[in-house]
Length: 425
Ligand SMILES: Cc1ncc(COP(=O)(O)O)c(C=O)c1O
Image 1: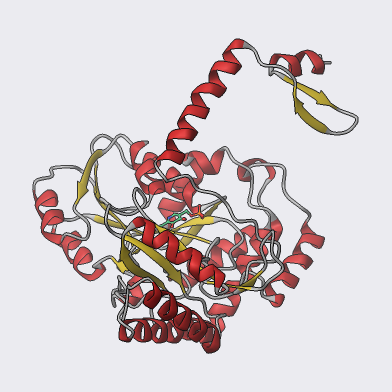
Image 2: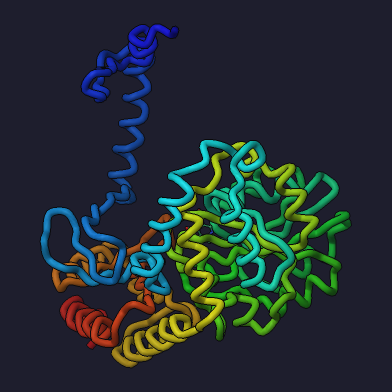
């Protein structure tokens, strides 16, 4: 039997087992030094103005939310809840049923005793949705990105990655032993020059389908053509595309009219597809079989819980039978972008529900967001280092669940604040 109190002391904590609480006990010199080092770094982050604080939401995720410290309803324009399904009653009730029938979790990784029929069904459904052979589920898309490149790319191979790809892709590529090449953002000439000079056995072009800070879309048609020309494979991260980009929500491939051309797709269940959690890789069956043997975040992490599997399953069932929500978010996006542009704002990106309202100055973006909140609109200002210096912005995210009145309310607030801060006339 381990000596818990000794263990707790060693960690500098006293564990009050009866009350079930943990409180700080004492600090060893190493612990005190550690705290000091970290505190200094926190101070620097605060001084640089890049400290991220978290607003505490007291309702479910939705277009209308309440936050701690206020009982007012706030209109939410900053979630990745593109299809508005995060609190959809049909999705929640289905998830409750599955929770009741399949339990809270599997207490296991997939290959030991963590695979239920619902996991296999969801994997098949995702493959069906994307028109692929098979799918492997992960706890998140971060994990899917972390587990892919290391498993498949060797020192004989080469990766060609857009410089603005998501952090999880960058980290995933760091873990692999292939030659690493970074091409300029969406720059096809740079990509081609790098592909041309490579003698690698296997070449893999890696790009976000949609870049989430700018709402712009990878030039996939041309990338696929280059891949063909230089005998390369293609990978896209579809986190900000699956379920709503393209006519029927099949993502960047559909939007760019190259359905079925990409070799490997990673995406998330944590945004448009119900917003719970989970990620996946979908593609050739040999790849998926191999990842089940080799991909470390899959092999060494717990199975996705049944209630979470259920939300993804229900949402895909809905999307496989109707494109109504996909069309709604597209109509809402068009309306917001057109009205804001007409009012004199610069909205970056393409016709995507991520609508960055470009302001330039970091302080202006932060003041603007505060003023919007006073008018009941929740939006976030982004500034350096999240976006380049001098390109501060408010990133508005449109959902299928927003009504036209919600969007008009946001547009009026933008115009009012924009006039008072002399952004528009
Ligand atoms: C482009 C992109 N890839 C991957 C991820 C990670 O997805 P998940 O939340 O499922 O880990 C995100 C989430 O922010 C993302 O935006």
